[in-house]
Amino acid sequence: MEHSGYELKPEVAAALERVGKIDLSKINKKLEHDNPKYWTGKLLADAEASYRRFLALNLLYPQETLAVNKVLDEYWHNHILDTRKYEEDCRLIFGSTLHHYPYFGLPGEPDEGEHVPAFAVTEQIWMEAFGTPIVGRPSPGATPRLTLDRVLMGLERADDGPDGGPKGCKNGQHCKKIIAPREIEASQPLVAVSQTAFER
Image (cartoon, rainbow, N blue to C red):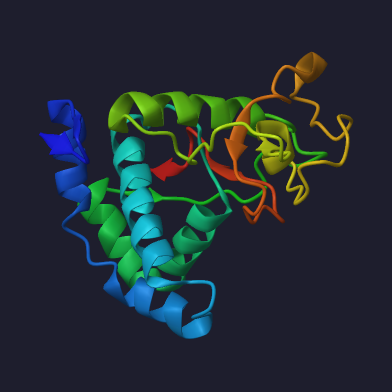
């Protein structure tokens, strides 16, 4: 099966088909109603498509810890808020509830800093499955860009010096990895689904 010009593996296509059975239109309607200036038609379409991919990857890789960015996290939150529908949708896709653990990787937690490698794993799996990065990458230019360590730390500026990396960023190795244009909204750390997120 082809997906935006990329030949999907049969298992990925099957997972997307399964996720495609759930109706997310009311989530889009609520997001647009709450903040129409931010949640434009294009952002909603992109967020829904990415969220479906995220759910598909959780179906295919339940043993992995998958991280999401702020837009996907907000979209996920709004799905969870409709508790009855979220439960029904999870049962349809996974056979159990996909739990959200918002404290993953935070300072003082046992898994402090683990959101950094989790995002790297998610990025690799995402690219292999869909042929595109989880966050679009512009070409490097003269304008400073947000990098992986900065987005993971929730920094909004791309040019605030090289000393803001998380503990998981060893020797600055992630600091030159461009992942997003500088206008990306990254005021909160990324969150993830841990390998124990499913309730069987």
